[in-house]
Every structure is written in C-alpha cells, then in structure tokens.
Image 1 (cartoon, one colour):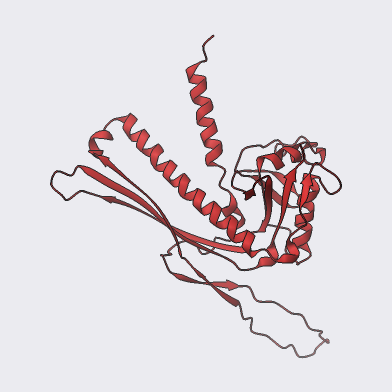
Image 2 (image 1 turned 60 degrees about the vertical axis):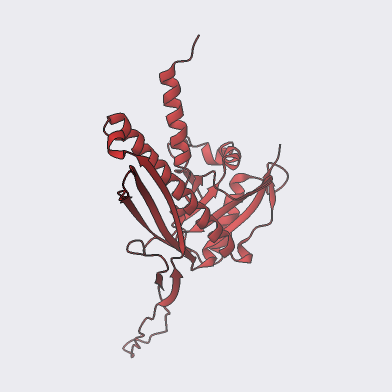
Length: 283
C-alpha cells in the first residue's frame, strides 16, 4: 500500500518546525537592551546597586545612602548576513505559490541567523562560567550521581550557593539527556501537561525552579555533551535586524537582490549565574 503523500507532507512540515524551534539559548539572557543598536555600538549595562542595612535605635538619626549602580560595557561586534538574488522577482512572486515559497525561503534564512545567535550565546555562557560552578564530568545512567534529574539539581545548587535567585533559571539539554530525564518518575510521574511537553524549543518542565529546554545546539565534542544552566541576569544580549532590497541599475540585469543583516552582541555580566557539566551517556 502506497504511503499517503498528504500525511508525508504533514510529517515533513512538523519535522522542520521542530528543528526551527531548537534555538533557545537566547531565552536564558537579559534582553533589556534590545532595540536601536548598530554594529560596533558600545552599550552601557547597568547593574542594580547593593543595598545594605544598618542598626537603628528608636527615634535615632537615619543616614541615607545614594545608590550607585554598577556599570559594564558591551560591544555589539557580531554581524551575520544572508544575501539572495532572483531573476525577475516580481514575475516569480506573482503567483500565490511563488509568494509562499519566498516567505518560506526568508524564514529559513532567519532560522539560519537564529542558529548563529544560538551558537554565539552558547559559547559566551560556556566561556563565562566561573570555575567553581563547573561540575565534575559524569556519565548519565552509570554509577553514583548519574541521574539526569539529579544533575540538574546539582547545577541549580551550584548557582544557589552564589546567592542567585530561584526565578528565571534555564537549563539547556540535548535529546539524549531528555531521554534519561523523561524516564525518571520524579520528572514525569505527576502526569501534568507540563511534564508531557516534548516540543523542541519549549520548556518541557521544571526541575528545582529551572525551566528545562531541549535543543540540538548544545556543545558536543565526540561523545561528550555540555549541559548548561543560566540565570537570565547572568548574560546580556542585544540585536538589530536590517532587511534591504536592491533594485538592479545596470542595463540587462534583471536580478533583484535581497539581504538580511543581523548585528548583535552579548556579554556575561554576572558569571555567578552560570553553571555547566560535561556528560556522556551509558549505552
């Protein structure tokens, strides 16, 4: 019996959508500085000031302190672009099929830019993690301390020791780690809607206040994968997208050109909010 082509098309579309949703590292960043940025811009990042308390005697004198926020600077020094050209663009986009094809093409280009951003933020977090928050390597599914669930608990515990708040925590795992995690009844045993989520790019649940995201963009070296935890306040990220359409001016040139440029930058401002562990998986 022949396979239903309609069903095959639906499955293919679903598969592409899952891959497109795999870019999630940006979710673990502070994006308060998104907006009007440009290549080589230097953005001033403000850190909330520390507040101290003092003893106070009834009817005594109160001394007021002027809070001074900390300052760091982030340079927007990354630029990626995809550039396309097409002969007689207006004619090819005249049909609804051509318009839909072009829309999908542009979306795939944007997906590729998102992939570049994901890799950039992933490496930024890895390089910015303080040594005391790097856990000892472990093999998931083999020996003591080899539980996927407990590994996430240990990552959260590492940043908690640095007085990082429980809110806005994210952990980024690969599909193999997800497999071990979903076998753990402590994660899935309550049969909640959140626990049953398996869509790439969305939080599939929470462990110790940390949203768990599955992505194909985790760092990998051979059979070793890196599981990264990030508090949103640890890393600042900003970007600006510019789309340009160029009309040909040379006689006989019918190629119109379209390019999308993404300028972006990031900085680890509070490394105590990052932790990671390198893992392998038992057969």
